[in-house]
Length: 628
Image (tube, rainbow, N blue to C red):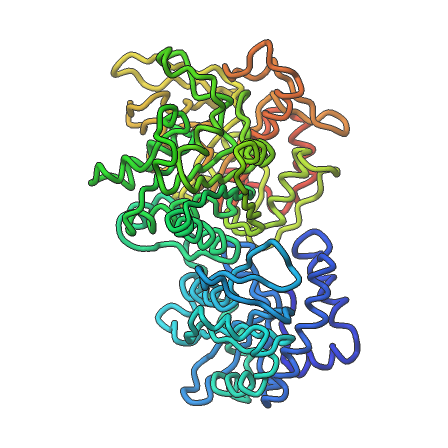
């Protein structure tokens, strides 16, 4: 969170004019960049509206927690009021979502969506549903609320709106975690606050919420089976829930009005794209809609078939590859969810494709044609192979050529890497994927970052984490030859050799051997720790602790990175692959590897000068200790 003070203290800071400078300073320290003008305007207009209402309710001693970060994600609640319940004497928490909107109307077909006057052409999530999602998420992940879920309530406060201008948003349905008040109902909002909070100090209640143990993150694979077969396992927040509602609305429209829409969801690693995909697939499956999930990742598809469809063949059949739709019936599906769409290829044909199916039709067109609502989820910085070409521009061009409208939803939230926006920015700046020099890592209490002096140190530290019940994996750039043919009964050859340390790559192929899991299960099977994974087996997955070996294909020289294509053993790079493409793909590869960890990342480079640069950027007190 940015600031925590009593309501009376914040009211005094508002009067003195110091609050907003303090918020901006804290924002820069926490997030590593300046707040946007719209965010600062929101603080200046909305925080006084809330604090004045709290003071008028006689709750000056209640603790106000501004811009409260939800655990394991970069999402933030505008404010949480912490105090004691006036009747029970228990800790009581009110999550408040503040909106400056003066007029907003619910979508007639999807009440969890709304259109805001003054923001044309863009649908928003109904703030009642937004604050309800925040409450549900906190109840699920903050240990202080475990067994005490009744202690948290939520309200959306549209302080500039009237009942006439925005009251219809109530159609989303109010609940204890999703109350709704407009500016002309300020008196009712004050009464609501008095029902939930007593006048005594809320400091101890705020302490308890802050000290609440964060429950382990919901691992995607661990709950995928139940998500598909039975009930919703994930709590979707903000843009995630917006995307979910937009797709379900488009499905209804497609059936009722013979309408076709293309939806594109963009976001970085850990922004929740695959969670949205599985939530949608589960809901559509339960509704009896015709929907399929497709990727270009063999590891992800095989893992989902094995885990989610372990006992049901019909569930296994929901997971396909992008090249499965060459002969698909036009609009034969209600929805086709294209996860990791950045891995689309120019065409679906390969050397095994029958001549009759070699139409030359672009793969993106095949996927658009296959369903009434094609949904593409992508991150353009995760393109790691030559020939992968999924981008927003290419999808928009293909859709426009067919006369179809495109709805684009950017996911700004971050659920991997402990929800640390600062860590993702550090990785992007480190690798030169955005303008600006690499920056020093400032620990943010969400993600731990360390540099190892040897691969032995890295492995020993990860083993220690595993001994405490955490998952861990080691991965590396593709800088060592990979023995792919192994005689039955033989041990996996230790291809990844660094000095006197040597470990095998993960198993090549679909069958486990020598006690190691097949490649598709390397990231999820506990037996995968003994091998080194590559980008093709790590992409799309997450684990608690990640050890990353930066090989000689990417080294720091002087003041910049140098990519050595000759050091790469990746067979997908041909002599004809341009140097510029190899440079971009190798940097993207390390971005993928560096963003798999949920708790922390340990980095080791095989190059001494590169290790020195990493030590310069990563504070010495968080380096990996030498193994005992």
